[in-house]
Image (cartoon, rainbow, N blue to C red):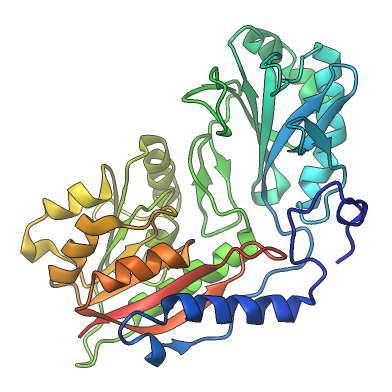
Length: 385
């Protein structure tokens, strides 16, 4: 893949770009295997062929730093001087995002919105977060320092739709503190549409819900997990029930339901994500008894369930820190015969596996969510020893 920004030295986020893509994939497989090597039984994992990604246009969610001035805004990343670097036509971004950025710049100019300047801690508009959904419709979230310009953005929605016709959900996120985080705690939805239909598993995304940034690879991940989950046990019995812990908007649970699991339950601390999962389940024609979703802490919820309600399969998809000692201890001790662990951090995965000696890793697969970087997403099928 050719990238003018990389060649010019203005962006080196895709650090592996000079390597041929097949070499990148092989390196990730080697790195994950080395990280997991201290785990008992890791040398017996049957590694499936990596799930590769398109080399260009794969990023369906983008976090665009707003920099420059009101008359000449930039949309891209923070540079070494902590000021915005413009990245027009970034080749890893979905074409729908790149088509939207010129209109977004015109919108910023039209409203006279002042980009936030990190070194001086002044300005209003910090980031624009964009997600591409089904039919290339967009969720556009303006991350603002205050509420001062929210009404102006709301009034200018007709202009925004003229400039970016694919805008479907538009919000204002309020992020008042000077911190190295992308968004703040308050979200104001400005459009009638409140969720974005995704192209993956019939999912729906709310403004503060997590979605994988690579839709094509996410589809492969959910499909693989559903295949593992529905595999017959050694005695020929078919699994019937599944928990999806850290379920987000319900990707793993809904994929399992589509694989004809009779009962799936998703648990996620974000109530907004749970609302999106429930909506997607109903649109898929799933009853509450077939697919239920609960807003709660995954570890606390699991520990309060009675032993007879423990399912045949438990899927965990935690953040980078991993599942932690409490949930690892629970999974190690409970009677669930099968666990599927989806990890975005092989180091925390290795630590969690070491705390679950009663679960033996059987198969694994790398999912290349972030080509041209060292980031590795890995899923493991674990069976109770």
